[in-house]
Length: 117
Image (tube, rainbow, N blue to C red):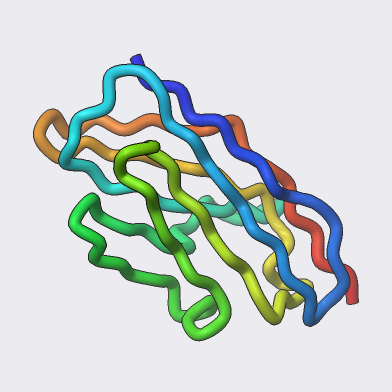
């Protein structure tokens, strides 16, 4: 089993910054992809950013240039630095880890990010 614990959400004004962190524990395969997804009220969950254990990243077009994902492999943590936040970034943000060798994924409990205009 794998547990993901997120932290760092909150309320911020438009233009501000927040940093989300996620720590994974349990049976962690070395080769994996860690990422952040978000779900706004009435909308589907969508990918925000993800990073492989080798360091390759990809981002949603809506956050490119504003958000940066990073990870610490020995600590099994992933972070999301969010700058120039906009009201449309308001959502519950979920941490995700995907193990490519067994095609299995796990989710965190989610953390609320609210950006006021």
